[in-house]
Length: 487
Image 1 (cartoon, rainbow, N blue to C red):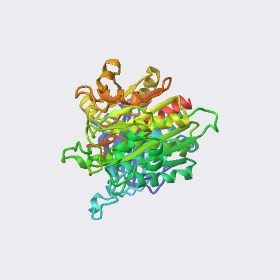
Image 2: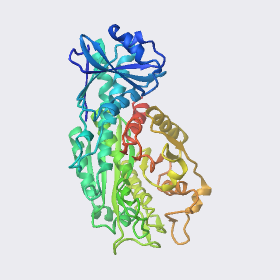
Image 3: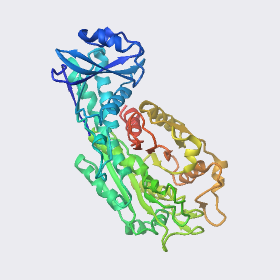
Image 4: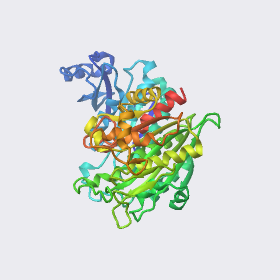
């Protein structure tokens, strides 16, 4: 990842300098006096649009330098500026960028600098681990970004520290999501998360024998067709010293999903390595919270399984008994995520008694049909909790859309031979999936379910990510913790 630092003045040996420009901002307010005329001539058709860049070469401090004028729009969109600069320079051959914020008012400078730095760090993330013949022109060259903030170095570093922690958490999630399933499976997912103990996170792991003793037949039913054993991973962070009750984050961690006996079509099945995106987001959030020493008490649980179709796999028509004692008729083995979540949610309630639970899961393709790739879906039994989470998502541009629930939908998963079936009709598939999970939430517990099937992997670049793993959910949950638990 990029090395980012803050300094008081512009270094004399900088070859490439970026100057942020707000919408319709006068040249004199952002450009050093000796390049005002050159900048004015180069920006005849430039109005400071967010992320737009105008490049020019000019003599500054007696040396010819590359000057990048980067637009921030009317609202000073620091994230789009940072993203645009990294996109342009990451593989350009440039190793160093200096961003001069002298043209930004002092009180705003520290927060702007930190937000720009976070976007730059997130946008620079790459996953080249298995590329042995990467062409030289495609290799990242940008190594450092120095941000000039005048006398605001201490303020900028203070603003940057928590944002850096979140960026590192999102990068951790992206790496988990990007890894192929032959490398990342339940046991190795747990091993990757062991590094969080150095930050003060406590880890507890249940193997299949322990889960079998607890009667977690729903989760184990998904796993029984795989050579890879399931795991239940619990990560605990208490930055309150025991003063606050725990909140639970629960993540679906299907490290590869073939669909089981209800086999998915072959084309596109390779994408199912990221069916553990919910668990990945939960793990990355725990890294972020522990790194920034969040004053919150969080119990994070990841149900980790691989869904495979061998001779031991569960069949459509089977009936399994969940940890809660409720029975489930399996109509489709590809509706497996809810079976993992229901036992994970039951377990965390039995052991830690949280009053609030938020689960994240790449649960249904129907969610993508409903909302595309612009919003995740949120289902909840509590209006206040839903509003808090949606508001947090807006702040960090990880958007959610509230979806309906109700008795009419709930009846659609009643089974004629068991307490419930694991799918309803084709219509409203994301809703009936949420209704299934809701049956395992204890009375009086506030619960929100985030169906993020369309959000954890991107086919085109965004402000904070390139194509591939997005790290969706980490910044969202961290913001909710700031607003609600720490606010």
